[in-house]
Amino acid sequence: MEESIKYLKEQFHLSDPDIRSYSPLTLAYIGDGIYELYIRTILIKQGNCQANKLHKKASRLVKAPSQAAMVEVLEPLFTPEEEAVYKRGRNAKSYTTAKNATTGEYRKATGFEAVMGYLYLTEQYCRMIDLIRIGLGVLDDGK
View 1 (cartoon, helix red, strand yellow):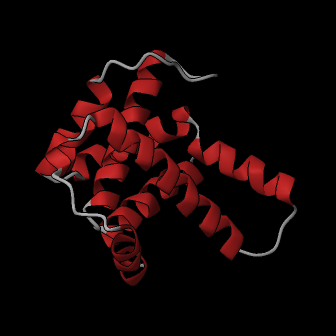
View 2: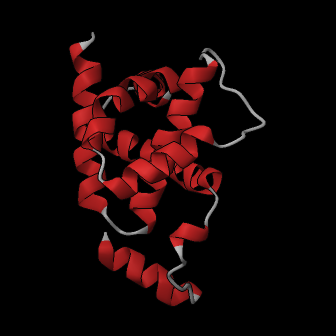
């Protein structure tokens, strides 16, 4: 993946931004997309399945209540930088709300997505995958 990102940067003349200057909602925006891509990749690599079944599985894992449940276990594992990003994301003033989620769940999910965005943009892919794996374990235990 690192080679792909390097190539993307070269082809589009992208520089490495100062992540600290990004709004937490911007980090959550990219974090939402990359988290969903990782979830879809995990589901696809588990074997061929009907698209509607894949969609239902992915939707269950990326919805705000699931992310809020994951962050309950992940927050104590966050590095100081990740904790700061999480709190900024959780406390950000968003003008949208999630369907089928409480305000608290939505805010925690936004913080989680901000951490995912931070890790992605700082190219800490292994750390992101480790946190996702731990978080998914929490959701699997609750089945």
